Amino acid sequence: MQYFKQLLADLKQHRPLLILALLCILVEALADLSVAAVLRTGVDAITGGSYQDLLAVGIWFTVITVVMTGVVFVRRLALGRFGEQAGAQMRQQAVEKLNRLPISYLEQHHSGDLISRLTNDVTLVREFLAGGLMPLIYFPLSAVGALIYLLIINWQLTAAVIVVTPVLAAAVTLISKPIHQASRQLQDSLGDINSQVQDSIAGSFEVKAFGIEVEREKKFQSFVKRSLQHGLKLGRQQSLMHAVSYLVGLTPFLICFGYGGYLAISGRLSIGSLFAFINLLNHVSNPLTALPHYIGQYHRAMAGYGRIQELLEIPEEPVGGVTDPADNDTALEFCGVSFGYGESELFKDLSFQIKKGEITALVGPSGSGKSTIFKLITGFYRPNSGTINIFGHEYAKWDPQQLRSRISLVTQDPFLFPTTIKENIAFGRLGADDDQIAAAAKAAAAHEFILQQPHGYDTVVGERGSRLSGGQKQRIAIARAFLKDAELLLLDEPTSALDMEAEHLVQQALERLMQDKTTLVIAHRLSTIKNADRILVIDQGRIVEAGTHEELLQLKGTYYRLYQTQLQQAG
Ligand SMILES: Nc1ncnc2c1ncn2[C@@H]1O[C@H](COP(=O)(O)OP(=O)(O)OP(=O)(O)O)[C@@H](O)[C@H]1O
Ligand SMILES: [Mg+2]
Image (cartoon, rainbow, N blue to C red; front, side, top):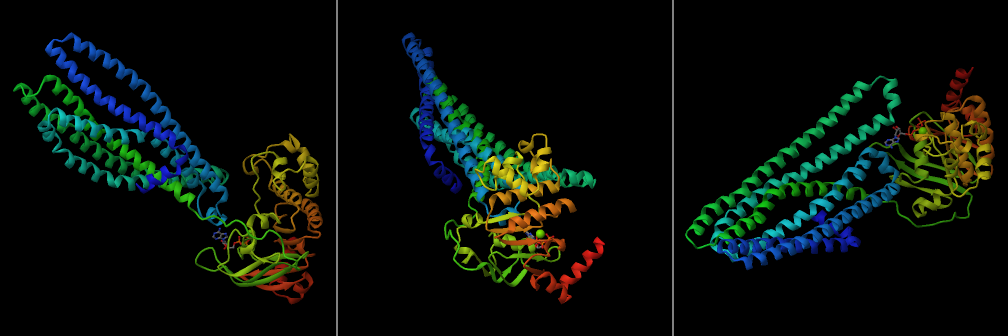
């Protein structure tokens, strides 16, 4: 119920549609009752042989039919619109949220499940609002109205009929309780299936190359099985509820035929009243038989809404703060930074300083935390303790967007959007013109190969840039960085996917890019960082050596060993 209230509060702006629908439902309920009244008069007119009453009944029926037709049309239209608007609003909110979710959250959660919340769960809520909500309001309303009318017709018969109803209604409520939990489990398992499907598509190359189709299928089957189990459990609970509700629905008719028939035969109830009674009883018993279905739909929709809300409630990065660098020489400073993704710490008390305009290289074994340092600089993760100062301000004081506009990041595995090469480069600086884009591509040694593509700069690169080679993608990412022209450059192995020749070209380009900028570059191939002003060697969460290429070679420590190994491999 709490979720339902929250849902209605969220949809405040579409309330007129809901109010219109409620009015229609009220009219429908009244019209239903008047059908019983007309039926009563009609049957009595027939048994009494009054043509005049029969004519009046005919006119009334016509009026009710016309009114009902119009009202049902308007109600369906209003609720249909209400559902669509609500669906669109939730989707919009969820998509906006997705763009604002912290990287730390996205890296720990599967995108398939997030997509399932945006699609399956939103659909559940939309369908409930457009279809399932009406009976939940209409049935109780018309049942109460019918009950009052039944009391007016004959209170003894009504009392006999309804004495069983509360017991039956309580049974239905009790049985419906576990349905919410089962619905939630089903929705969660559908989210998991979505994640699996996405993995199989994204990893289709690996699946085939490693021949792990059967393993993937098995894994998929286990997820399908779990979802099937949840679905079956939900089905069992719903079946039980339906069965009980039939019992609940038919019992009053049994009593009505027995006791009502006796009253009619003994002349204490007219035939018309008995007809009306049976008709009205439908409005009491129908809800009891039909409601379980709609209660089930309600629970599934609320479980879905709960999953959407969970997504919307994830805390976002704070906005606002300092927008300009302080006037000092230090570009970047880590002071006693400790950090770990989970329980264990990756960095303990990490401290270093980088002056403006310096080129600093980060070197270290795979998994030592080099890329993580970039994630800390860009604020995708926050340190557990210690502080990071960038351009003279503590990270927490910066407006994150403003800060990131001053940083160009070329990641290890650059992502390209499935659009044109031109657009992919233009993300570096929105609004850049064709000449600026071409200049950036030339600087990144990408211009030549771009011109060789079927449509040049307008060639579409495919999902994640799948129609380009690794080195081509990397050069487009570098062109992006050129275009952005930010004062702090973070290069995470920018030339790792290039051959010697292309690497040489890009290396020259990068050196041009690094001029009068502060650069942090991660490199495995040590030959590419010989010219760095300073090299920081990272191992097991600490800086173990620092200095220029020559200084570090003289130390004959970790760097020396790494360098010797690479020389031997190359030679
Ligand atoms: N999102 C994450 N969640 C949990 N652990 C992570 C995450 N990203 C990285 N790690 C772990 O943190 C450690 C450091 O990873 P990082 O990517 O910083 O290494 P790296 O030095 O850049 O390695 P490489 O040279 O192979 O790129 C690794 O042990 C890795 O498993
Ligand atoms: Mg890395």
